[in-house]
Amino acid sequence: MSLCNVHQCTFAVIDLQEKLGAVMPSKVINRVISNTSLLLRTAGLYGVPVMATEQYPQGPGKTMPAVDALIPASAPRLDKTCFSAARLPAFMQAIEATGRSQVVLAGMEAHVCILQTAVHLRDAGKTVWVIEDAICSRKLENYQNALHRLLQYGIMVVSTESVVFEWTEDKNCEHFKAISALVR
Image (cartoon, rainbow, N blue to C red; front, side, top):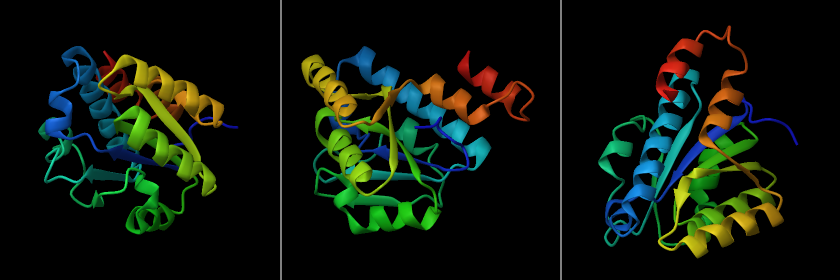
């Protein structure tokens, strides 16, 4: 295993949708939105490819506006009905088109779409990082079970700041001051 490499990474926002977010505990969803936003801003500074999915948007709605506003206009935005984004051919094509071997995941729900996507990406040969403070489930037990299972599958479970500073690598990095301001 290695650290999360800014030149080998793709960032995927999975199903961070309005109506689904409305049923999450407010403290939890606020944390997920904040950390996903930090990751999107950092990805923008470093040119990390971004993509987003929406699980059957006619039901849970569109991507939350605060997050949607930070997703680059050029980023693939994919609707899906399968729980695993990695079962969606267009998602895997977009991942492969980046030429990168690592995928960072944030979004909802940890025990369903995040878990299944992470396992299928790992099975496809990708190194996967799931951001524990940028994912959630409606019930704490499901979130905790997802983290436990992800670790059993050999998937990296890390914090937002770990990834942000692994991408940054050095205090002398040209983006260090901007990153420091974002993390405060």
